Length: 203
Image (cartoon, rainbow, N blue to C red; front, top):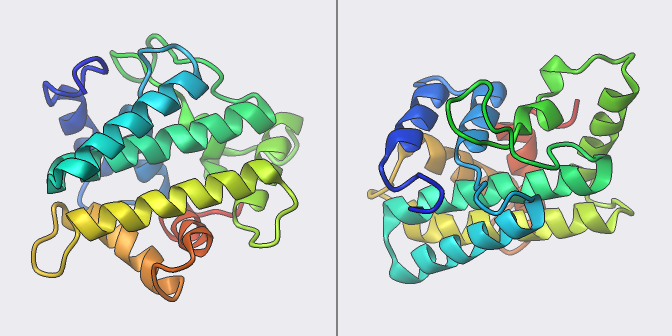
């Protein structure tokens, strides 16, 4: 968190301000991109940093840190997927919407902003369709589903126990996805439900 300028709390506060009290898919994506890891300058390496951070927080049993780290990991998993399959968000934005580096996940995945006549947006839409397809032929989509679903399940167990959730809004996204998937046993189904409910996939 320190290397990513998240330990100070400045970006975390900005993320929760962006999410607000009535989250929508575009607000959730904005919060996730604010929590993206950027210090390595490329999605694969930043994803590995996010993974290591999440695993360390998970092992510690810290509710709040695990929850935040899980959304950084979720963000980087999606960014890595989109950068691989449609060359979107291939590098951090040094400055733009925010006064710190971030990956523009919204550009890749905010379906409400897509232009149906734009070939680039059409490619992004097709990539999203693969993410919510349980029978997708895309190995990249399968890997993203499996990894993201596993993170959602693990984080919910630590951060969202009954009567002691770390954050009601974020835990609600996780537990609703797990419930809609019929439980925690099928990580890919959990991811698909998260995509549908929290991120408004498919387009």
